[in-house]
Image 1: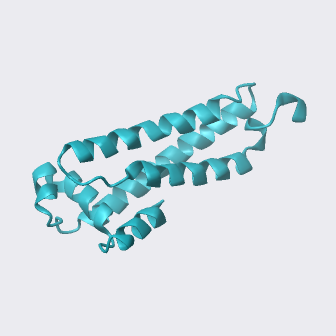
Image 2 (image 1 turned 45 degrees about the vertical axis):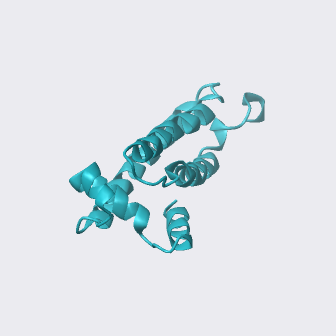
Length: 134
């Protein structure tokens, strides 16, 4: 996921732009993010918060997959993945609505969800197999 943002930011000529903008939003709010100058340590704060949020999402996803292995609810993991993308799309719209450029957060989020979903499907194969295949 971070690689997607780094590639996008490097493509437009501003590496670490997305984490700096999001960190500045966390630290100083919308007006500071609009000014263009990132708050000191903003990218580091973003990475710290981002890391622990994804750890929490990973634990929740793993618990959901373990629960799905014991029950015939194969629809639940894909529904959770789609549901996990909703807050990222909402954040993307909020950033754009605040007068900041579009950061395409949903694209990086989709990459992260796909990577995490692939790992969780590999780690919990019973959650994605039909009951007759188990």
